[in-house]
Image (cartoon, rainbow, N blue to C red; front, top):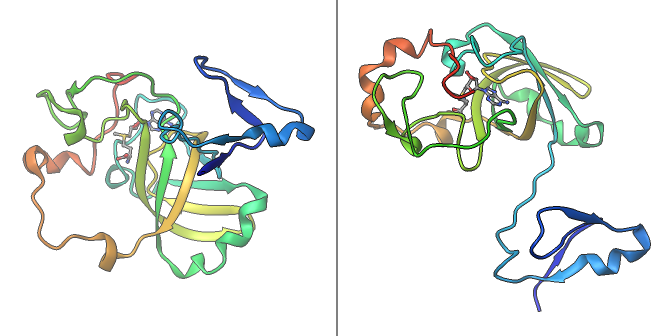
Length: 197
Ligand SMILES: C[S@@+](CC[C@H](N)C(=O)[O-])C[C@H]1O[C@@H](n2cnc3c(N)ncnc32)[C@H](O)[C@@H]1O
């Protein structure tokens, strides 16, 4: 039988909260993988993103509008060995939780437009799964701190993953960019207002 290992936190069927079990009861944390829980996904932050942006309003809407803005990643200490070899890369893909977003609409007027667009044709922060993705410049690594540039996330944003940016893997050669083709002049200057607060 397929099993799911839940360490210390167990979801109680039909309830939205978790039961924390004492360590001696860990055996109870092994529950059968069922159609109900197989898509019940939980991530823990690997660190936190520090930036000069405390408020949504005025935060650049993409790294392209945040050129030169410095920030840092404070990685969880236990994960530092995973940084080996990363200093050979000039740019990183950051995947993070847009933790100050809640709710979503499937039609939105994006920051760089004045027309409603389908949510998934935008990078709007209010999404069913509020995950943000930014390609940032890596300046240097000092222990558990990664100094970065061109970040568009709010201060305190929980970081979910870091991957090296590799143009040969991540850059598609021939692309269409839909409604954004008419708005590209905004990509280097746009800052957020309060429409997604
Ligand atoms: C348009 S989103 C784009 C984020 C990312 N570059 C992406 O494409 O997934 C950037 C905006 O989201 C908002 N934002 C940034 N960090 C956030 C956070 N942690 N929680 C909620 N909103 C956030 C700010 O208004 C920022 O201007």
